[in-house]
Length: 135
Image (cartoon, rainbow, N blue to C red; front, top):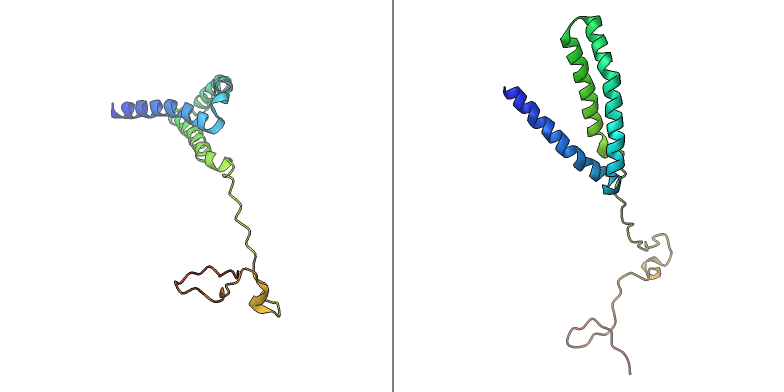
């Protein structure tokens, strides 16, 4: 009984999260066309795989072989769901700001670097770092 309850909860979780994941992956405008294509795919897969599973049962003579085959098919579908994040393109990165690098091979040394720190000259008595203007 607990196995049936667990199966029901898992089944309900799948059908609830299925639409939410599809909206996240494809967007809301493509939800209806996606559900239509998914419905066509499900109906055709039921028509194809149902008789194939019956054929496997007839050839093997046991239900455990059929259930194992269905479990393998479920495993591959779970593997595809896990690979969805890898199919998405990564978010675009902001380009890093361009910084002028000093020319270390110059014969002038740091004097050729306009961004190098230099003393500002004579300072006022109150400790300002703003250079004085001569009037």
